[in-house]
Length: 55
Image 1 (tube, rainbow, N blue to C red):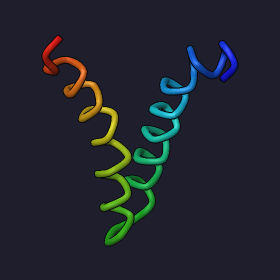
Image 2 (tube, rainbow, N blue to C red; image 1 turned 180 degrees about the vertical axis):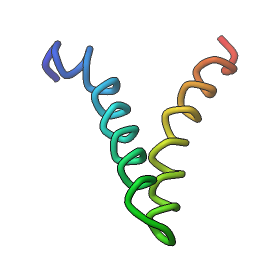
Image 3 (tube, rainbow, N blue to C red; image 1 turned 45 degrees about the vertical axis):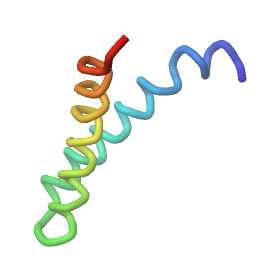
Image 4 (cartoon, rainbow, N blue to C red; image 1 turned 30 degrees about the vertical axis):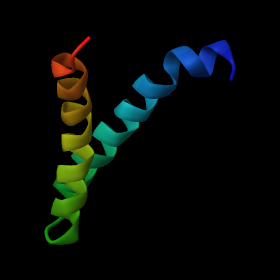
């Protein structure tokens, strides 16, 4: 794995998930709402998991 991907892979992925969630939340209802919740909830869940995990 390249050093760039190792350092920036997860932040870029979380940024893309957030952007997809925001766009989906603005586009419509129904399944778009589900995509928005997943896209905006995943970064929060990952952050909370890292914050509360035992060391």
